[in-house]
Image (cartoon, rainbow, N blue to C red):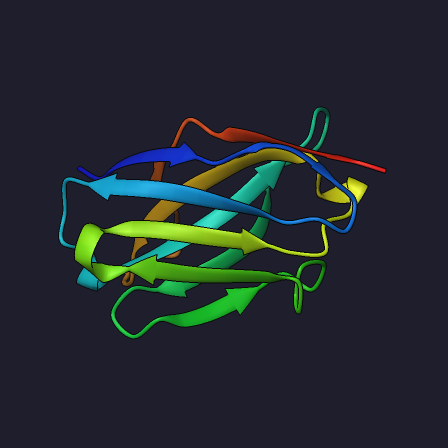
Length: 119
């Protein structure tokens, strides 16, 4: 079982930056994809970015492409989301998630961390 713990959320001004971290434990991640999702009240959770742990190949939602960077720290099994040029519409609870590379479903989730971007 993979355990995920997010940190790094908070308040930022529009145009600013934040870095989210997700500490991962419980499994070797070479067979996993790790992702970041976000959710605002009344809306469905949406995909933000993902990374294939074995080779670092990233994917991004169009809404964050060019602004957000997803990376991994192999030595300490930590997932990062570097959020730059923040917009008020980036305000959400951000979740870290994990899925096996052989599955299309993210089966492990963190508890979420709040990001608020003020205009």
